[in-house]
Length: 631
Image (cartoon, rainbow, N blue to C red; front, side):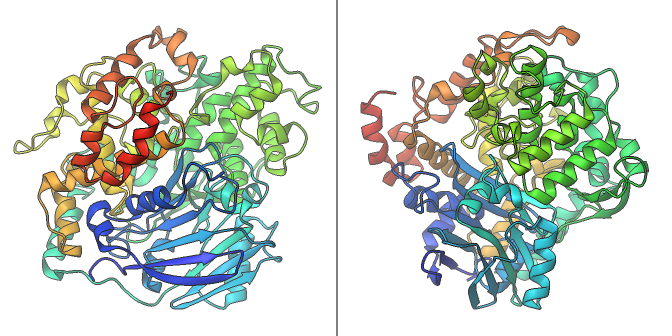
């Protein structure tokens, strides 16, 4: 077997037993791996009768055929039924995924619940479920140190922090210390009392055709060459990642400033200041072609002197505008708190931003907020409330449930100011002035998640190879405040990124023609696995994954009315940029998307013909009864 180990490790936490199963080969050919096979596992094993917090929910860690090769970038997909019942899924980098492959497994499926905290040790074929009383309550950094000392091995660790242990909303799984994935998966991991999975492997990955694979790999690396690339984002992204976008977001009115009441701030965080004042060294992931996909930071003076960590994404800094903060030391302290506790930065920022607006409107008072003046730009209040969320203390216990649940407790019209989709907080992408982003966020099967259709802009028409026919008009799609051709564009983004996240690779490197042309990826996939196919068949694999994900959330009760964006985006303008609200334009684009998908225009349910064409016949009967019932 090439690319794959063909093995799935099932761990029953209640019985404290583990067993190995073979992965069906037809799944590998039809769903590729990683996110794709995680989805079919979830679909077949966690039905609508399963409550997210019941022992029958499962937590799945998956790799793909290119993991453990220089293309996989240490990526894994972590998946579960989210507490809000949609697909809880997210990718993470680091070295854990490669170690899992080297240990001999493609997937780990966590079943049932432990009665006391445990951790799992995977050391090649040796699998042990061990007591974790000494880990429970420790932060992420401490857990990593304890596990390396206790096992005596150079293990890679996937763990939760105190936030996951306390079931804070959308808690994440922290991987290789500072990488993170699976918003909400950390909450389910905490519910199962699983503190960590420590992995050590000494094997490798076999490829079908080493010479052709090496040729394909060299072509891949050339496209990301920092000096010769045709994509200006490649060199800048290689050193600053999303922090390079800070000024552009503010200048374009793309910020969700002051809970999206404005699109910009008079002064905002500066990426160059961060690089010059706070970055201590670059940091990279497994076989990453970029010199600095992450950056180690340290605050050396002032109130937060000594704060340090690794910044793997700039999204948390862009979201600083939500709470009106313009201070790197404050935001790096916030990042450290979130990383060590395993809570999601976006949940915390958007929930606190919502609470700040409610405070300034008089909906909540100091009496509600434990005496903290929760006003926009109040740095001390922002940090204090973050700490209260992590500890689930006082008003923080309400906010730790997420803004939607908090609004149900507070009432008084507070739901009008929510920035959520399908109940989950946003994550920085604009909508009123980026229509393709609004549509892509609205129709996502996992709540707002830009990584599933990243990058958020259409390809520049001048960068498209002359021999490549894309299924949308790049000129029309490039007009970001027009509804034209957004349905076909977003469908293509979702289908193609489902492939890349199932191989897997990192969305950060979907640059140059690698974000437009799937042929280099097909070469890598075919020469690694031996599953050679046409470009059309390769693209169809991504469409199959997305349709199965849609079927899953349909089965959970999601319909067309859930494919929307926050009320503010539909009804209110961006006053400082004279940008009107979206109004009916979102509905026009959703209909266009459904038409191009072959989904029912009234419900958003995939049509029977579409499912059959994608060889998803096993889904048809599940959805027949749903079509007959009330939407």
